[in-house]
Amino acid sequence: MTNITERVARKANKKAKELFDLATHLVPLPDTQPPKSTEEMASALQGKLLNCFLCGGSVEIKLTKKGRPYYQCLDCYTQTFVRGDIGIKRLWKLVQDEQRPPLLPDLLGRKPTSSNSKTNIDSQGRKD
Image 1 (cartoon, one colour):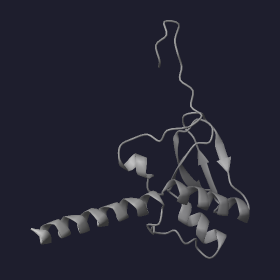
Image 2: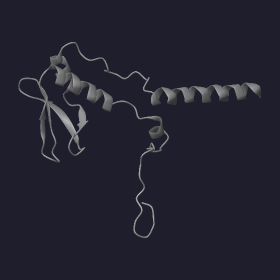
Image 3: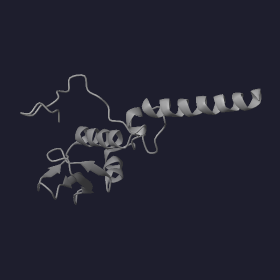
Image 4: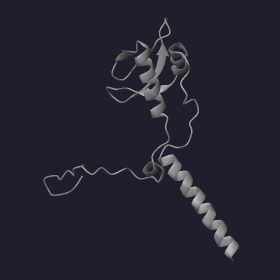
């Protein structure tokens, strides 16, 4: 009986460690090391998805004729061109951050709570 209890405890500890690692983003992600040059970085960004900064819609990163990244949102009709080494590196980091695994509350199916969130009360005193 003790062996079974020990095995269950080990499995629970292992699962808890996996969830903790995911929550703290300690799990190594593929392709997190940026390529050596910005040209390689820009070509690696091609086809990656990103959220539009204006409307939040999903956009795909494309390359210009000169090999620089840009994206066009078909929902709000904005085009964003990224020029220069610093901009391409920041876009690379932004895409990598969006591909991180979700935080622990997301894994458990709960939404994270905000300490400064306000509850809306309608005219009849009901909370939204």
